Amino acid sequence: MHASSTCGRLRSLPTLQRRLLLAAPAGRNPFLNLSTSKSTLASSSGALAPTGAATSSGGTAAAAVPATAGTATALADVTIAQFPVNFLTVRGVLFDVDGTLVDSDPLHFQAFQEILAEVGFNGGRPIDEAFFRRHISGRHNPEIAADLFPDWDENRRTAFYLDKEERYRRLAAAGLEPLEGLREFFEWVRQRGLRTAAVTNAPRANAEMILAALGIESCFEHLVLGEECTRAKPHPDPYLIAMELLGLTPGESVVFEDSPSGVAAGVAAGATVIALTTGQDPAVLQQAGAVWIVRNFRDVMAAIQAAETSADSTARGGEGSLSQSS
Image (cartoon, rainbow, N blue to C red; front, side, top):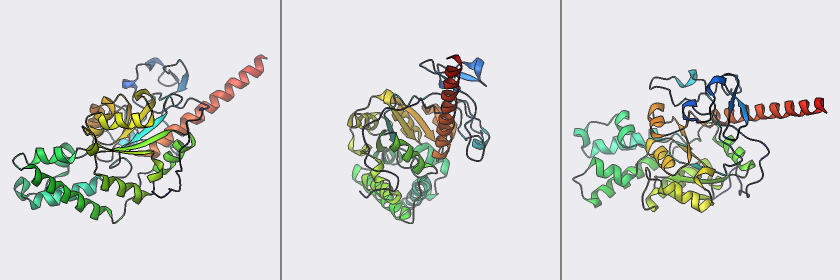
């Protein structure tokens, strides 16, 4: 694997100097003091942190979607609530690949749409995006083929999804771009020495192609494949294996996902799950168990930067108070 411009070999976890807060819906936070919605909230350790929207560089609210958001919620119009993810205890970040590192679902949809029409599925009529999201996106190929073609034998199903994946790789060869803010987030993770793994239901050829195309192979210590586990997502096995490889507990891990099956796998593994809306409705991701729903990693970095700024301001204020009292 060649080195990326932002990631190098990860070092052991250093001591972090401040508590960092990530935003997520109030309804998922057992420690949220609802009476202080515009001032402060209590974290699990009793520390206080400011509530309100994290802002982007343009001054607009970072478009994270609360877990209470409905189907018609416009991402750009949502102000994020606050939920503490304590990076003094979080030691690792686990990433899905398709739809999380890169918005590849449109290519998968096209490949499935073409091949399903060719084999006569649905009377030869192309599937629509709603069908793709509900029955295909994020799932393991053998399970997809078994559900779509219960009368086919295993060899025919295998040939079907291998053909589909070959089509996808041809489409993807035209060029892939990382999700917005991904490189910046990887740099933030690297600077803090957090452990990392890519965890995917995609075939190895697909996953390695995506990581190589984005130039981010060196950002991950491990690549865990659902097809090489006893059970793929939505079962927790791939994430549990990634945690074991990295020496992490579920409470030390944060998962980034984009599909209901992936979110369910992360939740079942006991991790905190943040979901991206590259291919699914926010309400579906919420129902699967995501604690925070965002468009991309730029939203994540906006929240982190706002939390860091607030933590610095609080620290300076505390130092001022101590100086005056002395």
